[in-house]
Image: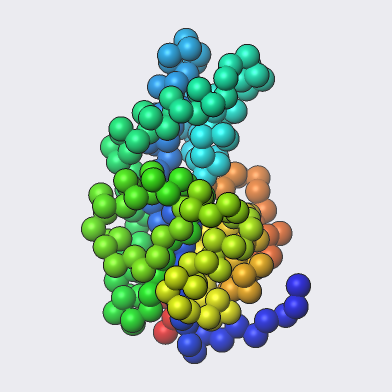
Length: 225
């Protein structure tokens, strides 16, 4: 990959992953998983086990819960049951991470547009976002099924930049998974690991080749002033 001279003097936009970056959605996703497991008389998965892989969505969580037994079932049926329960209980426990509201307020005060590029299905994302008034000024949202491709492919991020008419090389991308950093790097953006998100304890984020690893949302403010 060519070296890009990222300037922080003219930040065109800040784009974010959603689950594990702006919103802590793990306990609602975990509840959906355990609902499906209970219907098949399988043991529940503890929060300490489902939280680190919450960003992997239905596929990752169902594989965690069912293990090798998942091959005995129709995955599509399990997935639909998971998604139906999740959609009906989508904001029972989900909350903004501390510092997210302040960060978004500061971006808006600095007239820096911000958006969300997530692998969560677009319909679920549109259902979830209105529960949080802090998202009212989101300039663009691209879901995991908005386009044919999704992260780690850069296309959703580049598409978002086109939608709000900004130069991708003057944007930041913030996420808590390797696929986020891969997508942002491929889109020639300055990338930030959200180290408060759903990251396995033994995972070394230093190997992801992000520009920065930040420990809280408000740490990003140092890069926009």
